[in-house]
Structure formats: C-alpha cells, structure tokens
Image 1 (tube, one colour):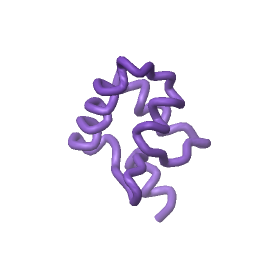
Image 2: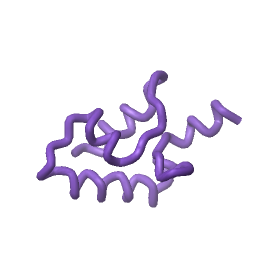
Image 3: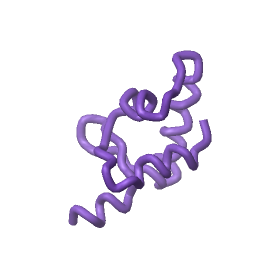
Image 4: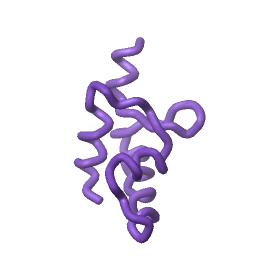
Length: 68
C-alpha cells in the first residue's frame, strides 16, 4: 500500500476519522496485505503525517486545524 494513497484518502473533505481496519476497508486492502498496511499507518503516525485520536482513530493533522 502506497502511503500517499492513505494520506490522500484521509485528506478528503468527507473523510471521518476511523480505525486502521476502517481505513483498510475503505481503501480495499486485502487480508494478506493488512499487516503491511498497519505498519504503513504506524509509520505515518511516527512521522507526524497522521495523528491518532481518541479510540485509536486516525486523521490527517490538518483536520485538527479545521476543528480548532
């Protein structure tokens, strides 16, 4: 899974913060690819390109600016 695909998805106006499983489902990630997908999401979080919200839901940092 391309990290840019994940970032593009979470930056869409209609995106609602979701758990890793919700993101995977929305992006059509297959069961065999899921473990690698989770690692990409965690890496994006470590890099600050994604933020983890309450209840392990993920969003783009720009969402924080829009809601503040």
